[in-house]
Length: 281
Image: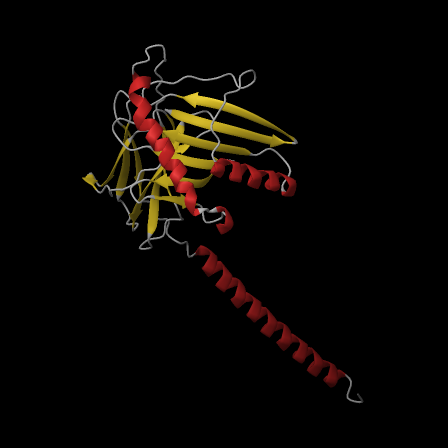
């Protein structure tokens, strides 16, 4: 089950709830006409107060999304985003909430994790009931995939390839990296999917590498909405630094110096010539 709470702030407060059931099915509420009673724990209320303060400092609309997902095949996932920026996510393997470094420490309350455990309990207790509800329509959205380097590519300097996977549902994918057709996938102990405003998800997969001319990397994505795995390729192309600008700069500097020397020589010669024509001077 996925449950997203959207809070829009623009003078007045509008609370709109959109529910996405499961890894297995989904349903939507019309936000304009329907409101859902949702459980707001102390942490969400704490964050709402924070956003109210934010609105007075930075006027405009702000969106707070609280999303949790329940799965048969993996553990519960839970995260909170503010205007598409992550506030925190729950790492149930380590037993902590991982907060964004920009969030003031005064808001990183240590007791908040116990509320994440409550959502986890709800998932385990209710997911079998939700699966049996045949009235719920199943939904699948295939991912969009883009691969690109984090920094400008410079030969021999450490860099990171990023495979950006976007707009997919349900939030379960498998990513495989290759270098020159050799599997170089790095195992990630915690795969974290982030929500989009439309209810789909996005994910960043990363691979550290050292650029070498001609190397070919690929990112292959498997998802149940795809008939076949989709692969994106990226080849290392290092642009050689042109010596033209340096040559022209050096030539210009040389001509400038010659011009100064020549001008000085002509001035001196002119003064000497004037002295010959006017001995009385």
